[in-house]
Length: 203
Ligand code: SAH
Ligand code: MG
Image 1 (cartoon, rainbow, N blue to C red):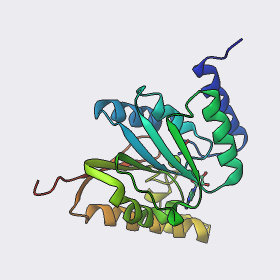
Image 2 (cartoon, protein in one colour; image 1 turned 90 degrees about the vertical axis):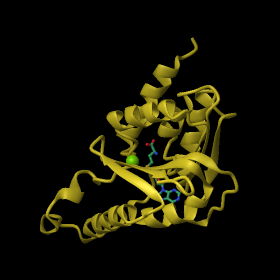
Image 3 (cartoon, protein in one colour; image 1 turned 180 degrees about the vertical axis):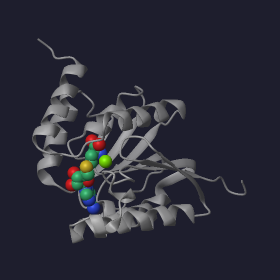
C-alpha cells in the first residue's frame, strides 16, 4: 500500500523524537506554513535542514514552492534525502550538504528561514541577507531557546548554554537596531522572529 503524506510525516516526527532532533514545534510550523501561504512565498532558503521536516512542511504549502536547504550533519542530511524522496519532493527541495557559513548561494529568495546553530544567528543573517529579495522576510526560530532567554542567567547552570542565551540576546538587539528591517518576535512555539526587509526608499 502506498503511504499517505500524513503517514510519512508522522514517521518523520517520531524519528525526530526518538533521535532527539530539534524539529520545529507544531504551533511554530503552523505559523510558518500559514505565513508562507498568506504572503504567497515562492521560494525559501533554509539554514538547518535536520531531517527535512520543516522543508517538507513548507514545500507542501503550495505545488509551486521551491526550497533550498543547508545541513552540515551527514547523518541528518542522508535522512533528509530519504524523507524528501518518500514525499516525492526531490524536484522542489534542493539539499546542500555543507556548513552554511562556508556556503555561497547565488539565487534570491522571498523567505530565508534561519534554524541552525543558535549562537551563529547574526553571522547567518549577515551572510544570507544578500540572497533576500526586496520586501522579503527573514524568519528565525528558537528566539526563546527553550524558554531560557527569559530566565535569570544565574539559574542557568551550564556555561555553554549561558553563552548561547547571551548570543540570542545579542541577536535580538541586532534585529531591533537594524534599520533595514522591521522585526517582530512572536510568542509562538519556541519564539519566532519575523524580519521584513523594507523596500528601498520606503518606510
Ligand atoms: N529546520 C529543522 C530543524 C533544524 S535543527 C526542522 O524544523 O525540521 C538545526 C540543524 O541545523 C541541525 O541539524 C544542525 O546540524 C544544523 N546546523 C547547525 N549549524 C549549521 C551550520 N553552520 N550549517 C549547516 N547546518 C547547521
Ligand atoms: Mg528550531
